[in-house]
Length: 325
Image (tube, rainbow, N blue to C red; front, side, top):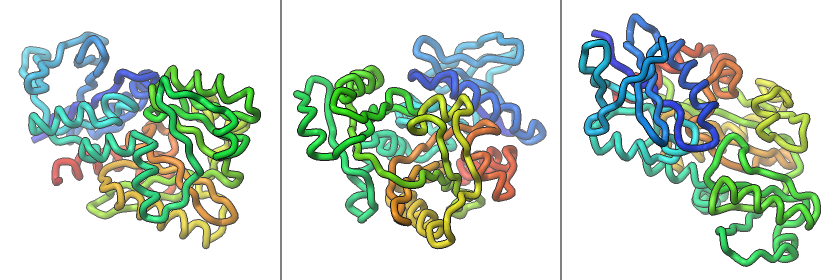
């Protein structure tokens, strides 16, 4: 009997359009002989099933069911394709846990932890994972630009603490750049972090639970045409993404081992994609994405493809792992 799968997409953040695209790719690549797939848009003002004719059917939030085409549909599993809130930060996953609904992501606490860059860095530092030097600010804090420079130097990166897809990130080359960068980051979040510049090779690596084993995917080297790997570089072709990365065997091994170690330290399951800067052959951890882009052009699917895993296999495995777990 075919399983009913709710693919949730959209969300409450600046990443809503990217999420809708990722969710659509999942919908198109799930095996229709195995699954009845449904596109569920989770938006600030409505939770709705959207069919192929763009007709909309409201979700009953009591049990996450829906009346559709004369049938009352309940779901066997939720495929989480929401970048940002409330999918990547764990909010909606806590709801699913309360109603006993299986889902493809890690438990809600792990999702909340890894979405919070500051908290994630605080945890991994205790396990001697190298990172950039950081300064944290909350909205309303006094800002001393000279003290920031004394602590982390220039250039530096200014980031929203809880945001993805490089929204709100800027690179400050001078002291005059810091305040505008802080203001930009605060448009996305009330917490920000400012990090020292790491001069090295940027790489990204997926770690997933595949066929009941933690699997490290081939590493991608990122070369941005812009000043850094910003939104335009990620989504508008302003970067080269080379898989496998052109790094030494020794560096490859170090990145693979560190990525897997971080996955285990943080208690992860399901999808993840971690970012590193290699400085003098030593990986420095930047952050982890737990609902990475899922289009054909996105990094994790490209890495999976290099490992011989198709999109259909990747998505089917995520559902199977969720149901088994």
